[in-house]
Length: 138
Image (cartoon, rainbow, N blue to C red; front, side, top):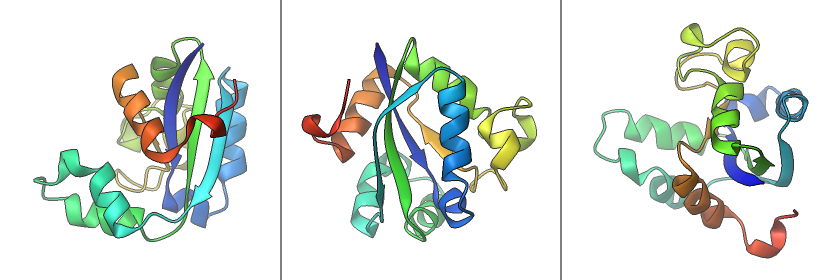
């Protein structure tokens, strides 16, 4: 089974919809094999999103991602990265397919409820950033 990484973002934890998002993930065939609620520090957020550091939205992104707790997750399943990207829907909720997490729950492009890895390589890096191997179940 492949693995991917997910973050349930601050807008979703603030609105207490984590359970609804988890249900959608599991109903669509992915298994949650690790999960924890954390409060990102400014340094953690800056390091995790360093790929965006030169972009104009970087400071807003860091402020948003540190505004409330987040749920970090490891998901497992067939073609996990691609499967989860389909479950999440387009970054802009206006363009997301009906029934996707972002169509159902996102408030706007930034407050779009979830993050998911964009490749198997990045999934492994993102998982290693937040989890020790003994925290992940098979």
